[in-house]
Length: 465
Ligand SMILES: [Zn+2]
Image (tube, rainbow, N blue to C red; front, side, top):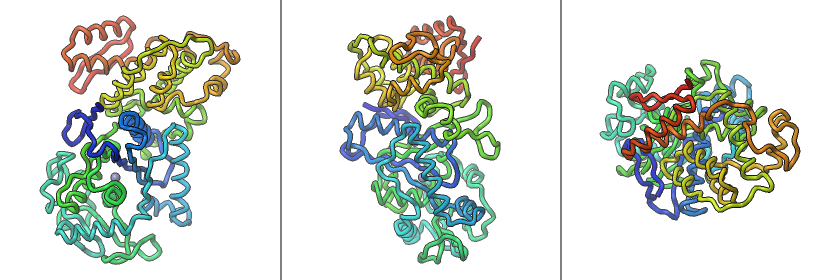
């Protein structure tokens, strides 16, 4: 049984799909006008891992995974104008880069990748339904969703009205009946990309895109809707309002799954702060699997601090795993990989799964370890290529079959961040089960290794002594 934390109910619940033969998952995809940064890669990797787990549990053909491409947007239009090219030049270029970067991180393409520009009729149809139901109105070439018309509005973000209005970043728009109302359709000036509609030539707002494409490709109610934490409000709240009101109150998704931010130590990564790190730059120095490992080293709902140290530790641990599993001459031994899979089934606890993978790889090697690693999208490289790809310093110039068995490639001291995080997760699990003896033992063991844990209101933090 897979258990998932549902943002809607704010609890971990058993994941029971509506139809186990056709499980539906939709994740909000990229707006393609610039190179993806490492924060954008996190949902791609997290939901790719969840897709692997679902297929493992329910069967290869059990899941339909859709991730959209937003290829009409004001930022795209601005980029196209700046370069003096058609918007499609911008969107095709950055979609290709996105797929290349994510591919390098072992992210499989989704089953369906609907493009907003290809789905305009479905959006117009849904907007027309909302107008008909009294949930939307036309004003000065715009169509707006009427937030007061939906008594359920706010159900996901649980914000009060004041916070919602503040969060909606209200622009001065005299045609809005209510400050919280949001755009479903807006007019396009001459020379700007647009489509004919009952409300004149224009283009869709961002939120309606996802609601309409989910309906068109997956149905009225899907099993899992995913995305980054920052999408809860207003984007997902608006998707819910549109879909519920268009579909007679049916819920849009049965599970809402959100991943946490990637930050740069203290700062959140953002274009305006100029501290963006892209997979593209990192891939010049590291194999994509190292970046994937780093992204999975923290639990997906926790913030992840992206540091050079994290990437180095990830590489060192992966190097050890490759050696343990693929080094010729190591005796094959039956190992139990269930603990690895159980960790993943518990709300995708990837740090715990990785730590258990490392543990079983010490016992012996067996095909099923590789299978378990594949669920994380790890150990997917040709081992000989992996060993060759290492810098001469880290393998000491040895050749095939003579790779050193022990010792860290980067000479790190003390337990790795991944290992520490995994043990903190294990301790939290023990505490939740009121197994305080185990919780205390883990704390004492870490203390002996020079790691001090501090329990605070927002969870456990750690520091090296
Ligand atoms: Zn969306």
